[in-house]
Image (cartoon, rainbow, N blue to C red):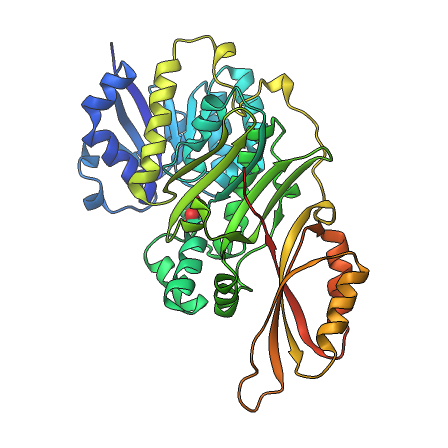
Length: 437
Ligand code: HSE
């Protein structure tokens, strides 16, 4: 049988990695796919030929639409990233009847509903394993391996850059900005690093995970997003002293009231396996009603780990080329006509426990006033940590852990605490999750 022709958009880190993995493992991959897979046409504005040996044997253009319109190309692999022109290229590839593989989480989170509808109409597949947690096959695990389960919640460390920053702050007491600069130099960070540190990249991925977990349309604009830029080395230290680690988590949960979709720094008990996922590694913990908790761990970024997921998707598409389009694995795990219009809860209606850190004047009665405000709001305190003031200083940091409470009620209590004359500046809150089965 003739090999399948692939068009590759982008020859950057992941594009180059994909070309190299497909070339190096061609025989093994063909044995798995049942046919050879060859890249015949690629598009890149700029690239380093030395990093993709063998690239000279194929056509390379600087106009990605030429690849998408190439009648010999059966599968388009989109590794350009960003919203546009990626959206136009993918829609054009679909209109041309080509299958698409993409690593583009921003594209799927924002335009996935439109893209999947177009693909469904044309009877082609859009595969996106590499869009979430890089090399970890989490989409396949949830969409296929856990298909028997009602998923209750998903919690993931799904941004390697943020996890690297928090790990370095904890282990080496390093400064936020210094570690971010290193993550950028190592090539982990997004082109715009605010996507990493402000949680946007993780929110793209969490939006996708939530849809696959619960069978709901993609709703990036309903995902609450909070970054790690306000976390200081002292928070990492206080959390550690209380038996917790701070992780930047994406959490999707289904309750009676609706769906929670949120990305924010989170205190989790240090004994949880996921609390020990350090550096640039990613991990996703899924609770299914039948299987219980399952944890998926691996490299969430990087050339070849991401290429591993891209190439696996190409193999899946090749295997499915002859199957009935109606019987292919649905894009969002549930059949397109079966997606539910479940309510996504606003943060005020989400219940979690809290870590609160505030700076207070060292004077009698402060603690009582703060405890009184929390008590009035029905918020129960689990632990208190008060640090000695520095020599000659009249202010000291006060750390409180609370039991679970609705966010709306905590908002009101924090407003009252911040209005106290003895409290300096604003209260830092970090939500806490037990992540128990
Ligand atoms: N910037 C992302 C991260 C790359 O740090 O996880 C992979 O999506």
